[in-house]
Image 1 (cartoon, rainbow, N blue to C red):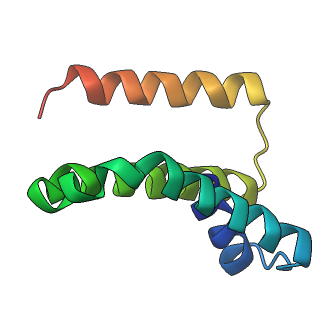
Image 2 (image 1 turned 180 degrees about the vertical axis):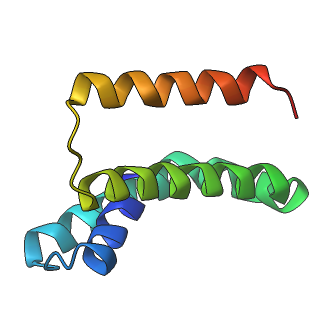
Length: 95
């Protein structure tokens, strides 16, 4: 998720891609490759699960970047309460 958040921040928030951010992204991707190294052959047999995990990470990163993009006029406490309420409503309403 931090990889996507960094890339979305560069695109949407116009943050600069400096050398320290590039090094951090490189370390993050290297760590991800090390952790998933044994499971790459499994991805070919079940690509839908990997796609869902990738979409979840991208949507989480997009939510974080959009939260930073908009100027909220309510407090963080109230904003968190609304997010939890709307998320709980969606979870309880079923598919």
